[in-house]
Length: 359
Image 1 (cartoon, rainbow, N blue to C red):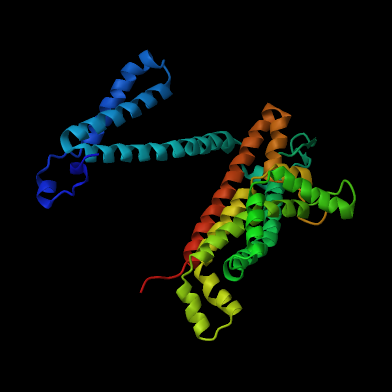
Image 2: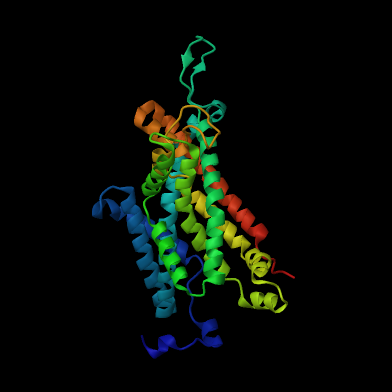
């Protein structure tokens, strides 16, 4: 890189230097697509992804070269980096949009009022007066919500108190370092290990073959706690030290400073982290299949009997054949909607409880 590349541009240079027209990116994109359509079948075969790949490559090379010829090397490098950033965004969005659109297309035909308001117990056909197997998903929705709520009740207090200890009381102690290492290890354990732990814990006291919803809540809490601890810890560390010192200078005890100053200031980020932790575990299958089992009927008691959840329902329907596969897609769409509601709720609560900085 030469010294001229690093020299700042003067006001006169920025006003008189030649610039690309505003339509340059659109023109370059149109030419790139046309070239890719023509050369794609010859170079990479007649595949749509070949056209997309070549069009992106032609746009990057062509627009960068055009910018370099007119505006200079600095502008060309900036243009190339900007295009690479947009490509990265597209690469992240395309799979997400693809999965969502495919799930909606497959699952929407299976969703109706009966699908949402019934479970899988036998139902009476009003035309033939015969018992037919139900195809509803109500019991799975209720089971998912109850088990996830139980996991939240267990995980949120433990995670928040652990984060408060690490930030406010630990001060680099050996126990704090050990806790941090254990939290990192827990965040990487396979989900089925959490299910086996809950199964082993409850069978030790309740005997073999025991299954009920609280076992699933305990298993999911093992997966939620590391996320809650890490997110809350980072949010608490962002609280300015000046706020703590001002409160302590007024004679407020440490515990009251934490409850009235530190935690409310970081509450918006803490709630967002909690919602992300809930969204992370609401779709787990392996621990619930091991610890909770499966059920065909509605069970709203966390302390008695197996419960059905949406991930396990999807797996059961998928394994039964082509016709239940339609029901599996419907349950998958319902699960995605629940996760979306959780995320939107987290964003809304995060904005509500975020500290007000405006005057």
